[in-house]
Image 1 (cartoon, rainbow, N blue to C red):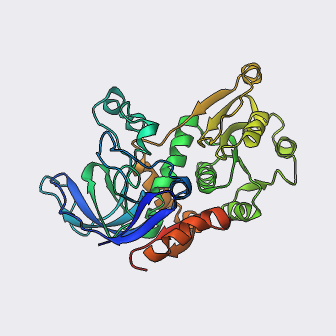
Image 2 (image 1 turned 180 degrees about the vertical axis):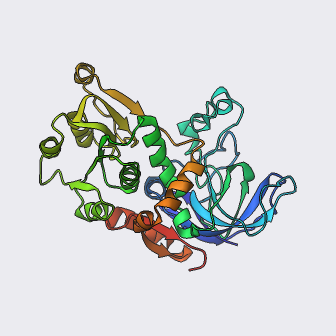
Length: 352
């Protein structure tokens, strides 16, 4: 079969590789769509997240088949699997965990105690073969059926939406609250979209990219460009005390500083982004303001709820899919995430 394989920084190849029959606890999926993530871009540009030595759980190291945001149809079923059949339309939860530590046993497998940053990204497409291929063998525990009303292309948004949903869940957002989002990248846009569908009274989103803000407007979000306006002043014209919850999805010092300014006293600052550089936090200010600062990493036990939310608001989620490419254009698609800000979610399809 054909697969998009990464060997290291700036070394991606489309290759013909073999795939075995599924193990007893696996299903083999014929891939239909696989989204390109910003983490794929970082893996390509500087090798971030790639296992250069054997991963402690999977035993794998580069080369690895890319892709962790994928959907498809069940092509084969392992001998011990009884809840799937050939032809089922599915999506995959790609996280890797030991399944044995205290956190895994408590259902917090996204915070597995035996997974470490230096081991790689601990995710299919990084620490084991992912979905940017014609087929993939996946443990059936992490495979979820799609409803008949949800197409496979839109269904492939489940994984990145789960990241946003975990942040929403961690923040405790309820209907009627006001929200601001720093950064209108894919996760910021998805966070804003979920907040909107959960009946937040105001959802602001800030970014310097007019292309990304135009997409946010399509989703019904209130947009602010910090290169043109004072974000704090603009928000407080309508919400004098500041917003109830701010989601930091940009991962930069200036946006973090603004997040502190715009959040009301006693409000919540939910950090979603992973910062590439050390950030400075004014703890004395946060303490006096009574801010609750939360972080979030990955997600757990969220896919069924996320699939339902996407299914109920398909018209909005479809707006985030901005391009479709074949395997031979995968590198072009990955690079375009850095150079073309009109791109939000690019889908790779083996059938193109």
